[in-house]
Length: 304
Image (cartoon, rainbow, N blue to C red):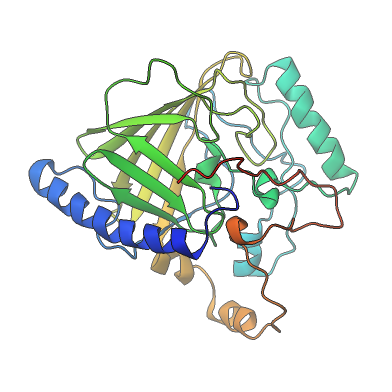
């Protein structure tokens, strides 16, 4: 949808959210799968921008403990100075070449040079990085009879999960890959392959190959107030072993309650500057025009 989406697309998505929610209610009555959108306004906000490691076993790349990470989200809550993500290179999951890629990014960060994420140039996040959207970008679900659609509000990232039991015979590589899904009781299980290897696994710049295979399990906890995602990652080309992670999301009200009243007042009283459109389809300019950045991807042919 690069550069071809705009107000029309947002209108279509808004209508789809409503219709999808209605379809979800009907499905709930029949088989009681999890309902991630009890009303069209429900958005899910990520707890943080780094995957949570499992209690035991192989897990995701984490922040170097010698360089604590302060996200922009944490800045909004505490006022602490944000810092960059810097990977702990001792994680045994990385193949030598992948470790070198992450190490080079670390060196750029430590040198003080800007290391802007690909999505700053409107590159889609890919999978599983789709789950690491910042707190200011809610994720929405549309649950229909034949597919589940996941939408990130800010950059127009959209994933389609087809409710079927097998992948296509010839999967074409794409930004978010081909995702198929099924309900197992109170859990949505999503199996994704065919993910473009230009995307990254996380905010540390962890690469992957076209053999990346991601299985995600989505379910509600804490009386439906928290959405938990449990991705399982396999890619022998980039990782020495399969690994697991967790991400959790709050609904809007719970996310806002984390921000102290005095911080909300400070943010609300901040001087306003010129509004710069953050929807990539409507802003053909890099957010970092004066800094090195990836070229903005453009679709040769509209996909609608």
